[in-house]
Image (cartoon, rainbow, N blue to C red; front, side, top):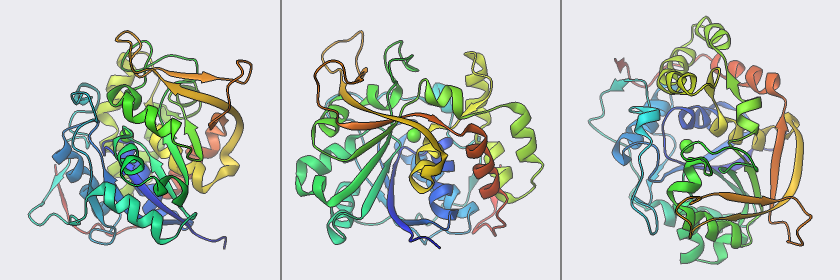
Amino acid sequence: MAARIPLVIDTDTSQDDCVALLVGLLDPLADLRAITMVAGNVGFERQVLNAHLTLSVAGRLGEVPIHLGCRRPMVREWVSAENVHGDGAGGLDMDFDDLDISGQHGVDALIRLAAENPGELTVVCIGPLTNIAMAAVKDPRFVQNVKALYIMGGSNNARGNITAAAEYNFYVDPEAAKIVFEAGFEIVVVPWAPLTLRDAVFTRDRLAEISRIGTPLADFFVRIVSTTLEFDESVGIPGSTHPDSLTAAVLLHPELVTGTAQFAVDIETSSELTRGYSAMSWGVHGLEPNATVIESVDSQGFYDYITGLLATATTPSRQFRS
Ligand SMILES: [Ca+2]
């Protein structure tokens, strides 16, 4: 078997973030060293519960450290996406009496884990980039110690989701995103549009197939995506969207990627109208590229990969209440 890939998932855990965590927990190629939490989609405390739910359904509660990171963006007020995500877990609940949370702050955990094995750790960044920017600000060696950042965010000269111009993660903390893209990291970007909208949508037919799998993981998946599915359909997207799990998947399985290009990516921070807009220059503007942007993936291959993971038999650590 190929060598396992050491990674941390930096997440604002709701819906597809949970699926990305399952990728990190279940794929034999993944060596998930930690989960770091950042302010994003839903209330911070709820995100922590959602991560616990996910570890539980995978039968791995208590096995992967959860570090709490930044509780708000660097400069701006936090902006919720609860209108899209609800509680982020489709109303699932369980006994949370003894939360399993590491004492070390998420930013310090990122710095430490990267420094322990310089050049080996990849961070899958599927929330606002606050923790990553703060780590780079606190310890500039973090930039060199990290092997790569796989970032879900932005839109490649295409539509936004929270505004006409901006994708949510970059909109919420545009200053953090700007710092990260200017810091010198090795960066791979999975943009929300057009990539996710074309190649990572699970239609109701696909979701029905998944619900027939019958494992605890498949049941969990169908339940947690229900809220975003309804929102996505209400705005004309023909299914649930999976940018976060796609980001984790392409790290472990680059064979899923069918098209990439080098871009100079910069983030708008001074305009109100286009706050968080990701300007992606494709090489004709005299700018030095700072990121590899994924332009297309094997959509069926990605779906098959996720359904394969969901067919894994697990014994949940705790029973859900719903
Ligand atoms: Ca996310």
